[in-house]
Amino acid sequence: MTFSLLLLPGDGIGPEVVAEAKKVLAWFQANRGLDVTTSEDLLGGASIDAHGVPLTDAALARARAADAVLMGAVGGPKWVGQSYDKRPEAGLLGLRKELELFANLRPAICFPALADASSLKRQFVEGLDLLFVRELTGGVYFGTPRGIETLANGERRGVNTQVYTTSEIHRVARVAFELAAKRRGKVTSAEKSNVMESGLLWKEEVSALHAAEYAAIQLDHMLADNCAMQLVKNPKQFDVILTDNLFGDLLSDEAAMLTGSLGMLPSASLGAKDPATGKQAALYEPIHGSAPDIAGQGLANPCATILSLAMCLRFSFNRGDDADLLERAVSATLDAGIRTGDVFAEGCTRVGTAGMGDAIIATLDKLK
Ligand code: NAD
Image (cartoon, rainbow, N blue to C red; front, side):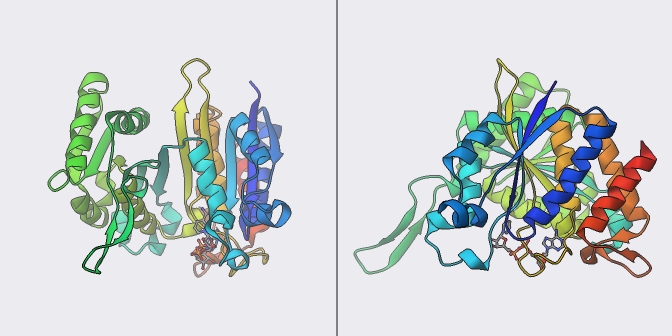
């Protein structure tokens, strides 16, 4: 089967890290019979400079047609101060919205070689492998009514609305249960059912779906504030954490810090699977930004983007073995002491962006 992948390198270090993912993709094409056609387009500031908008209709159409999209990062000081619709970030938000990417997957994996880079002691993070499934298109960031008004007495009042429906909860919970079935079989659903009706609905609907369709999976419920504490107390208790947009934003950033560096963390955002064709919109991207402070210097760590490609192999191209191989290659390269500056430690060999990509490819050659 031939898959199609749209590359959107974006701004800052985006093109540098996506270039390394392209080299890795070429290795899988040459060595593992991976059949992928790639195309490339502009996103964010690069698109504003060329076309006046952060996401063109043509780029969006290409994203819709592709089996998957791999993005670098968008943004930078050059475009600060532009109106909201002319900001690079509007291109990324537009892409997520138009492709209806409601499930955001963020693994927090601590590679053994980097356990000492974590803010927690090695024993708490070594071997950590948890996965956040965050609802991405609903909840308080999108609910209405919203806004700021001035009251009759001259006071100002700000309003946002936390709102979820059964179908919004079920579709993201389904993603979490199905992923857990392929992992250690455990989902922890985090909400604030003690003080929020929307949290109670979340808990009840997740439980109902679980009882009806996923009883073989272990389901635990946890209040989101307790989840924040448990993530630093005993993060290895978790397998898949399912949560809403707001709590997911905070908790997944907290978990990210357990693993050491922004340069190591991939993500995927998935839409609904078309029951007829099986096609599922998917956007893969590192969680870091465009890092203007190091852009253009060949210093960026490409691992987060290469690991995002591994997620793409697993979820969009059905190549779980290739994804495992790539993740093993990244881990073994770190074990060998090859490091970019952000994860550098005494006694290691310091390399730049291309050097890290080349070292991962050399490890793939050895492992295959
Ligand atoms: P950032 O993630 O770009 O950088 C934060 C720090 O981490 C910087 O010191 C940077 O050098 C370092 N860093 C990030 N990625 C790295 C990598 N791969 N290797 C080595 N070091 C790395 O966050 P920021 O500085 O707050 O934002 C910069 C720009 O990126 C802003 O315009 C922001 O809006 C944008 N941004 C975009 C995304 C995205 O595209 N998804 C996400 C976050 C921020």
